[in-house]
Image (tube, rainbow, N blue to C red):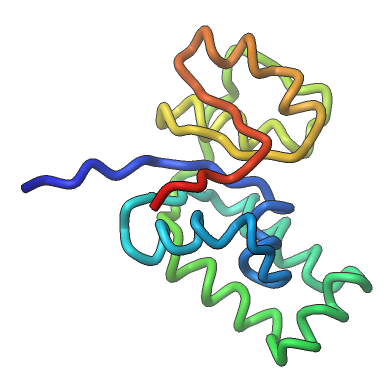
Length: 142
């Protein structure tokens, strides 16, 4: 039997929820990634952004409470994700330029997108026309 994997583009804040903060709302997503039910698509700018924010004071404090180095978190990202080439710009432009790459990657690979960012969430209708599902909360099913 073939299992269909759902591809997801996951914004940095949501990734932090399961990589650093152990947020219970993101645990089903983490289980799905570990089991292979979900495929997490990333590209280098996303990995670079995560590396940068891991030293922000609040994030670093929580990371250090869990005895996680930046390298530990990036290793986990690498193990859980599928690195892709930086995509071409999608036909729609996000008001927040930092979030454009998440939209571009989702569109390029027809992947669902989970983001807490208001500028991304405001694009739900336009992205739906392209077949892209945008959610503010991680999937809860395993």
